[in-house]
Image (cartoon, rainbow, N blue to C red; front, side, top):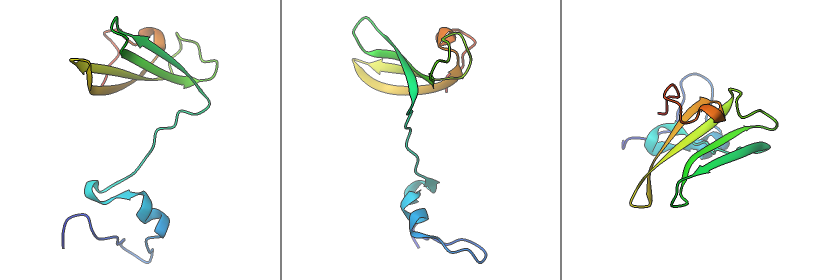
Length: 101
């Protein structure tokens, strides 16, 4: 049997249609979609107008308060090559202590 083609669970529970649609067989993982709804967004741009940092936080969370979902972007010749994530405050997005992975 090829890798990632079986939809079975151990025990008496059967896989539902919804569970099949949410599962990414090739990665053995559940599909997720990031939808930062009802949140504020802040973006810092490079001199060439590409986004360097993007942050999401609940409405009214201050920029100096921890609780921000941060994305740091890396480019190669204007092409996005890497998006890394960290959790911190917007004000500390570029701080040495903020670890992106």
